[in-house]
Amino acid sequence: MANKRLFGSALLFVTAIIWGLAFVFQRTGMEHIGPFTFTAGRMILSALVLLPTVMVTDRLAEKNGTLASRTMEKSAFHAYKKNTLTGGVLCGLGVILGNTSQQIGLVDTAAGKAGFITAMYVLLVPVFGFLIFRKKPTAVEIGAVLAGTFGLYLLCINGSFALAKADLYLLFCAAAFALYILTCDFYANKADVIRVSFLQFVVAAAVLTVIAVVLEHPAWEQIRPALAGIAYCGVLSGGMGYTFQIIGQKYAPPTQASLIMCLESVFSVLFGWLLLHEALSARELAGCIILFAAVIAVQIPAAEKNQ
Figure 1: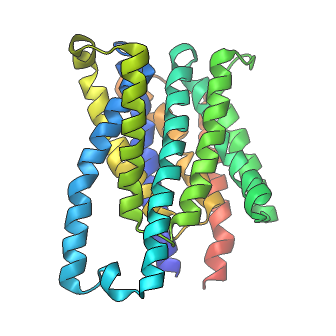
Figure 2 (figure 1 turned 180 degrees about the vertical axis):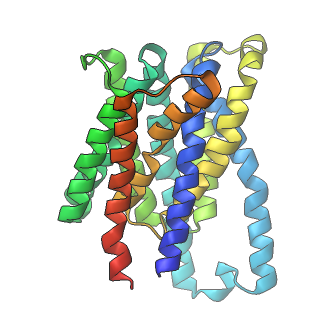
């Protein structure tokens, strides 16, 4: 059990790195096209990337005799398929709401401030978990969440905290991502996680393509300069990152998962330093240290429990 928890945490940590770098591509891509077009493009790519993964996984399962349709009882398999479909649709809605509101917010909000507001999902996960599923957070989790939130504040906020219209979009994004994490946690052990990941991108791609065509009327001349950003966010941030998240959440509790994934804010600053030669201030370094300490602290009780 301890090894599985470590494996899940490692996948979520890699996801945080991928998503941290994605902020760079999201900002550059938005210089050429609208938020719905950009998000629709990345969702289409994510679905295409995962399609062969679904096919290969099915073939391997059939070869190894572990195909769910053959190993599960009929009633159990019916529930498994229903959960996979329902989970894919609900996660798809979460992806739509979270990513589009983030893209819209990024248009007029500084990256650091956007990173902090988005990362408020760290605080909202245990709150929503208690309100929806009556999962009472432990004292360690509450302390780690508060410390992590304070670390993100030091890392990302260097001026006034007046909420503009764009900030409200990012707050909505944080709430959507918190609900998305809890949805993934709910279906992680009740459904085919690879298919859930694939279906969420199919749903998001279909809905967002229609919205983009109706509202933004994208042309190839506009899309072409943004292809690098769409490709990174679609293949790595989407197809790989979201799949790693769903698999990782099979073995890591939702509060722990959210704390690890919120490290994307840390990595966004680090990649800004590495790629854009932006220096980290003492305040930002302090935020990184506090946030990493919070992530470590929340895992200690789980590790001791499984010894």
